[in-house]
Length: 121
Image 1 (cartoon, rainbow, N blue to C red):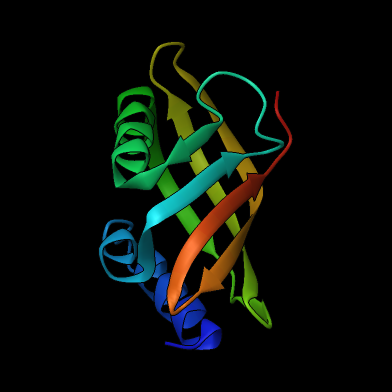
Image 2 (cartoon, helix red, strand yellow):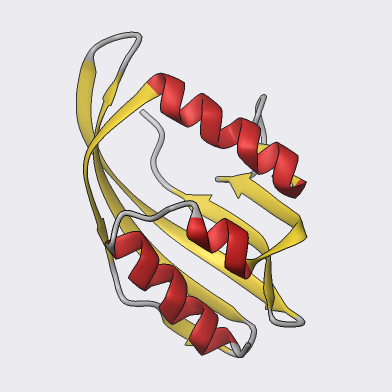
């Protein structure tokens, strides 16, 4: 698959609320997922096992009320997407809206790297 096709599928599935299908269909088993600059505990997840643990942590800690997803911007083997999420942090009960830019790298028809950029409170 070409980068534009991968980007379009990821965005379409996310807009439908299906955040699992992209991992199953579009991601390399050697995926690397990085939060912001990659510093801090849990900021880097590698492989499907690492991604699964990251997803479990997210579900345990956040209730998602609403998510919006932009159209992708594609440049060669890279694409970016803007996500906006209305969430409640379950342990504290604090509700907030956050905005982040996700940057994806594609090699050999699969997403091999994702990195999320956002302001931390």
